[in-house]
Length: 564
Image (cartoon, rainbow, N blue to C red; front, side):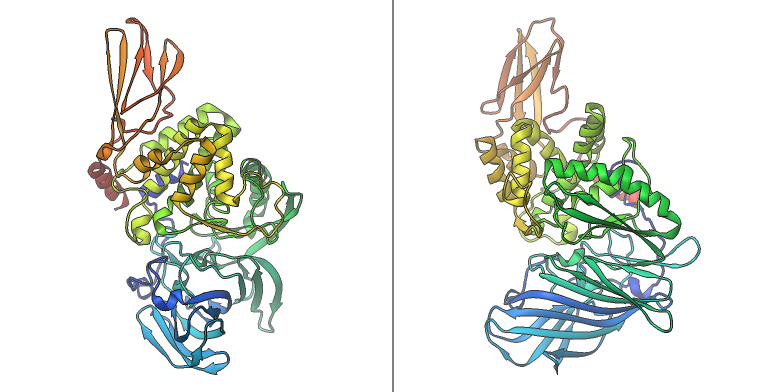
C-alpha cells in the first residue's frame, strides 16, 4: 500500500453507507469545526463534558443527554452550543432547572434561568435524539459509520475531524477550548462493546443483555478527537515501559476474529514504532490514561488515547504498517501540540506525514526514506499556500499540500539545520523543552502556531529561518532553480514567487564529491572542470519545482478525475 498522501489525493471510498436522510447536506456551521468564535462563545470556558448515550444500530439512531459544564468569562444571559439540526431536543436544563432554548440551524441558544456573573459555573444538560449524519467518505468526510462485520454484526464508528463534535453531541465546537475532562456512559446492544477515549471505569450488563460502558478521560482533548466505537470487540491488554520510567497501559479493541493479528500488530509494529517515537520526541503524552487502538470500518483517525485503525493489518512496501505509525504520530502532533488556528493545520499533518519516511530512514536506511519522499513529491498540488491568510474553513485548510509540502518543508529543514538542532526544535514545539525525557504524567498539552515553530527553529539553528517558511508555506508555488554551465563555472539562480528572499544553499555533486554552494541575492557559483560530471542536488534535499510535477490546474483536474 502506498503512502497516506496517495490515498488522500485519490480519495478512496472505503465503505458503502446507506441512509439518504442522514446524508442530507449539513448546515455550513455544523459542517465546519474551528471557525471564528462568536462573542458569546468567547465568553465561556468549557471545563468538562458528560455524555450519556444509547446506540440503536437497528434504527441507526442515538439518544441521550449531553452535559456541558462551563465557566462564564463575562456576564451572560444566554449560552450558545452547537448541535446538528437533524437531532430533536426534547428539553434543556441549566443547573437542574428547565430552561428555554432556541434552535438556529446548527446553533442551540440556551436562555439562562437567571443571568450568570463572571466566574460562575453553569451545568447545561441537553436531551437529544435522532439519526446522526452518515459519513459519505470517512474519515475525509465525517459523521457516523454504520458498518457490519463479515458475520453481520453491527460495527460502528465516528470520524469528525473536519466537522467536529456537534455531529453527534451538543458542545462548544472549537479545538481552541479543550475540556479538562470527559465522562462518557454508552449503552449498546447485547454482545457488543463500546470503546472510547480514556480509561474504562466499569461495564454494567442489564437484565435484557444491553451493556453500559463507563469511560473517563482526565486530560484535555480537542472535541473532534472524542470518538464512539461499537462492535463485537475483543479487548487485548498489555503494557510498555515509557522513556520516563512509567508503565503505560496498551489496549487494542479488535474484532474477535482478528485477535491474533491484533496481538501481532502490537508486538511486531507498535512497540518498535513507539520506541522510536519516544527516542526522538519524548514520552508518549497520555501514559496516565492508555495507548489505545480500536478496529474500525473506515481507514483511521487520531482519536486521542483510542486511535481508529482500519488498515486491515497490512504493511507497506517498507515492511511496517504506515497507518498505525501515522495515527500514532498525531498523539504528539495534533493531540499534545494543537494548532492555534486552522491556518496552521500543517503542524499536525505535515509532521504526521513526515514521521513515516523519518521512521523508514531509521528502520531501513536511505533507500526506503528517499523512495517515500520521492513518491510523495509526485502528489504536490501547489494551488494554495500551506499557511493561508484569513480564516479558512476546514475544507479549505485541509488540502493535500499540508501533508506533502509540509513534509517536504521538514525534509529540507532537517538537512539545513542538522540532526541535533532539528529534533531539539521539534521537541520544544511539542513539550516546550528540548529535554522532555523525564516529564511525569500528566503532560500538559500546548497550543502552537507556525510563527512559534519559526521562532523555535531559528533559535536552534542560530540564525533566522523565516525566509524558508515564508517561501515554502506562505506562497502557492515553489521556487525554481535555473542552472547554467560554461567557462568552467556552474551558475545557480533561484526564481522565487514574489521575488522573496531565499538564500537557500544547494548541494552539488562534482565527480561524486558533494559540495554545498551558498547563494547570495538568489545566485551562487561553483568552479567545475569542463569534463566533470555534475549533479545538482543529487539527493533531492532542497524542495523546489521540478518538471516531474504538473501545474496546479493539471494536478487539480487529475485529482478530480480520480475521485469520480
